[in-house]
Image (cartoon, rainbow, N blue to C red):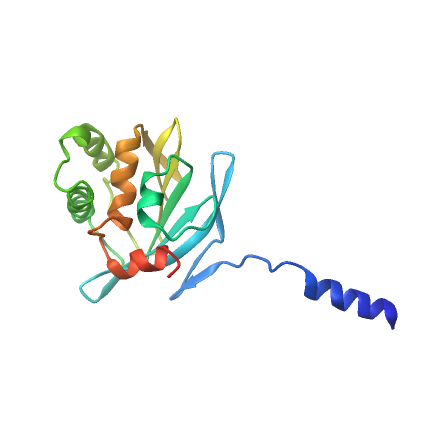
Length: 186
């Protein structure tokens, strides 16, 4: 009896196991790897265009944070996962959305990172289909890597470009205010 009580107490005193996050019908993992760094899911939500859900998005950081500017400015490993729920987002529409996001994130001053934006946009040559997963991962001294459906498309160096990329979701004029709030865990 005493042994059973000790086991029960041990189970209740264990720290909670991090669980994956359910966003609608999409399950986002509780962690992602950025190089050798394990990133934790900070928060998640849906990216909507008008009333249509386009993708479930998750922000992954080394440790939880709710300060969007601190996250944008940080030179530490972080990632965004996009799990598409809408079937058939054309590459043209994706690039248009990226360009709008970069413009908003930089206050219209894209000239200093124009070459990086062009390279980034060149990765988006295929239509995004339902259940496609895109990972945008930043690792200091390496840059922003873009993977689609598990395949690395390329990496772009530069902290200013990294700030603009994460500013798309977390900046003053985010792509989706509710998604920003969700990614910040609010």
